Length: 307
Image (cartoon, rainbow, N blue to C red; front, side, top):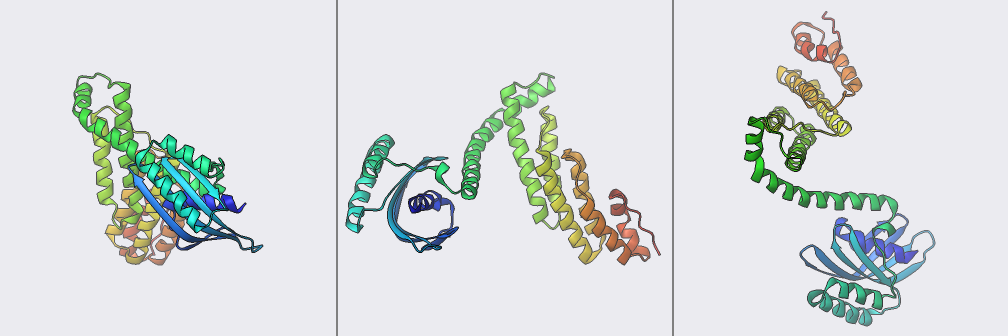
């Protein structure tokens, strides 16, 4: 259905790096004209597309309009029987209503001018739908987090007083603190593998955990995601170790393992790390070089024999 492809393009375009020509699976979409206006969280786009099914060569020109009310709420419509002049009149009228009337009126006009068939996120191709929902959800969470962050900062001192007096924090305040501090820890964990030295990230995580304890809050992290980030950071540290074999690189890897214990993120999959350190130990089995690896080898459950 070439109309559905056009609607998919119109809905996904704000989140995708589509050029003048885009490929969506077995379809090619050429953007012939496009206009977008936004006010706050809402936006209206109207454009003309040429959609081609590359397997059959079937081609259709379509005028598309999509109203994004915010978040996951999209209202898109498609027509294939409007020439350039008619599209211009239609676009001008829609943008005029968008600027001066309610969103309900804009939706009503869209339905009237585009035969009432509306498209939304459920009409996207499955993989793109999942990806777009992930992006929309992250955007919602960022706005949600800003509200929670403000509540947390306004009430942090009160929560500390309550904790000092051995009075449990109200559930609502505990929820806010747990969410904000948990998100901060998750961001630091996610950045560990990107940093050559995770010690600064580990220090910041330690500060966040200390703050949580001072408020009487136990953080609950998602075990699999936490473990995945820590495993990536450990392998990044071992890559650095393979290049330098210096004490600082060993300390870096040990820092990551310490974080795994402190965060309680579940058991790490150490198989790859163990194999790489074991091979490195065999290559560096002489005296001082083997001694440098010993602390990490012990933590990984390895026995390196010096020669």
